[in-house]
Amino acid sequence: MQFANPGMLWLMLVCLPLAGWWIWRRHTAHPSLQVSSTGPFRSLGRPARQYGLYAMYLLRLLAVCCLVVCLARPQTRDAWRTSKTEGTDIVIALDISSSMLARDFTPDRMEAAKKMAASFISGRENDNMGLVVFAGEAFTGVPMTTDRSLLTNYVSSLNREMLEDGTAIGDGLATSINRIKDGNAKSKSIILLTDGSNNTGIVAPLTAAEIARKYGIKVYTIGIGKNGTALYPVYNMFGRIEYQPQQVVIDEATLKKIASTTGGKYFRATGNSVLQDVFDEIDRLEKTEIDVKHFSHTEDCYLPWALAALALLVLELILRQTWLRTIP
Image 1: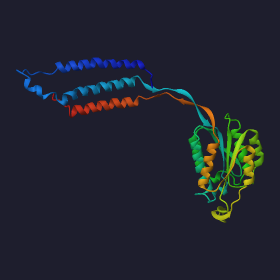
Image 2: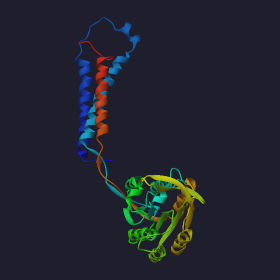
Image 3: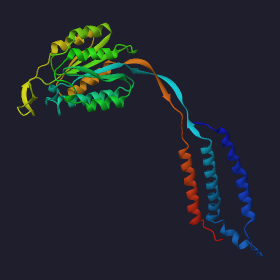
Image 4: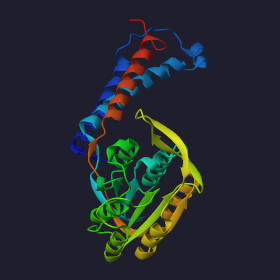
């Protein structure tokens, strides 16, 4: 803590003459009663209220000291500090095609992926992260940032209607590469989550993988979907979604090739718990020691002292009107 006006603290010295004046006044301002002897009263001692009168004035002096501190403007100081921590550049590329509404996850694949992605983002406090979403096309939802709340809020707002339907894995990967390739971190990685096969888009998935390898970007691919069949959304003749069991089809060969080409790893997530395990493993794999600068700004913090002064004055007033009340 520092003070913007430290010279004001000298005003506390005024408490010394105030205390001396009050003690002198206590001994001279009250009327006295002359008696032949005070011997009979010596055994009674001093009543507690007498000490309370001194304590009451002490409360007032402490309140004055708190107000002086307020005038001195106590502050927390701006400062930069550098510490070593573990971090990296990461882009999450998330498939939001209609097949992500399949219900072999709870409540469906998209909601499960969103929940795990948000949890992963929250746990990577020192990373520079971005988010790309893709379906029939791809776009950058959140550019590279360290703002965790921005990322998690955007993830929670994702829905199927944001993009034309389809699965453009290559375009999603290429867009992710554009977002991360110019970063300063030594370690760069893309986490690609999809539940299907590339069926549209401009860039082929393996072409995008070669580009990622050229820039030294690792791609971790996650195939989302249980083995066998799952309830998939299907539009009926009235334009409403119905769920029908269909065979789960994931182009694992391509996803494995993308991962191996870039030095990453392929994962198959067949349930909520498995998906969480996948993110936990990636969290352990992708960490690099970096220097992080922390900034703290100056802020006045006089409010606690002002409240303390108010509390002391209120306490003195209560004592004066109750236990330590005197007759004029």
